[in-house]
Image (cartoon, rainbow, N blue to C red; front, top):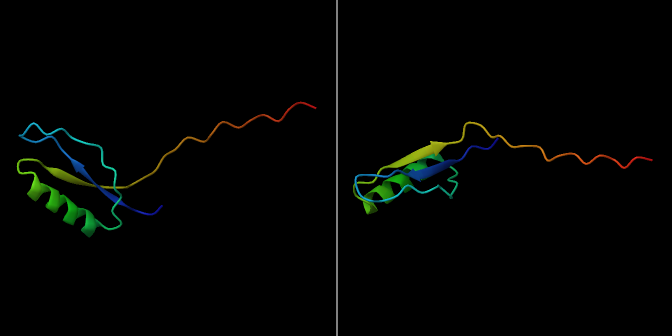
Length: 68
C-alpha cells in the first residue's frame, strides 16, 4: 500500500466549517507545508495532517454462472 497524507481543515474559533480532504500529498513534508500554508491564510483555524495506515474496500458481488 503506497502511503499518502492529506490535510484536514478543522472548525476553529471562527465560523469556518470543516471540509473533507481531497488532495493526496506524496510526502509528509509536502502535507506539513500545505497545512502551514493554509493555517497562515486562515488565522484561528487548525489544519491536521492525516496519514494512511490502512485501506479497506468491499469486494463486488460475484455473479453466479447460469445453470446449464
